[in-house]
Amino acid sequence: MSGKPIKNPEKKYPYGIPLFWLLFLSLISYKSLLSYLVTIFNPLAFEIGFTNDISLFEVFILSIVLGPLFETFIFHFVLILLLKKAKLTNPAIIFISAIIFALFHSYNLIYILAVIIPGLIYAWYFIELEKRNRIVAFCFVFLLHASSNLYAFMVDDLLGWF
Image 1 (cartoon, helix red, strand yellow):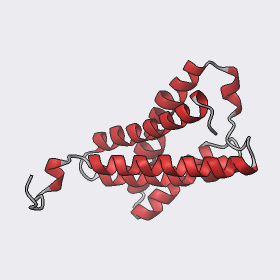
Image 2 (cartoon, helix red, strand yellow):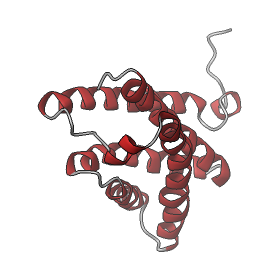
Image 3 (cartoon, helix red, strand yellow):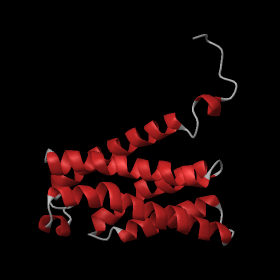
């Protein structure tokens, strides 16, 4: 491979594949650091009550498949499109989407506050990718959300680290 710059990086990396991995690594770093720091002071801060009554398989399906699919559709596909029709600026749309996304995760105040950052990332990523293709934006945000939740599932539910 020569040292020449790529003329059109979107052709080599369609739909921001490197950006996906950068955001994923940012999210898991954020989740790991935040989980570690918060659980030092309050070990039960990230406990979600409903998961105690269902199997690990059901937790997996809810948190890695159904949750991200539903949330990406409602908070990023539908909500962002409605806010765009209302002629709001992209920063306002990202902020509103993230706040509503966080409020939907109302297990406790710490959880709501912790989910704002991922909500900002998902909304921004959707808006960036939507410029090229709305369906691809939906799929990539869903995959990012599901991958992030898969990491949390493996670390928390399978390994019990946090």
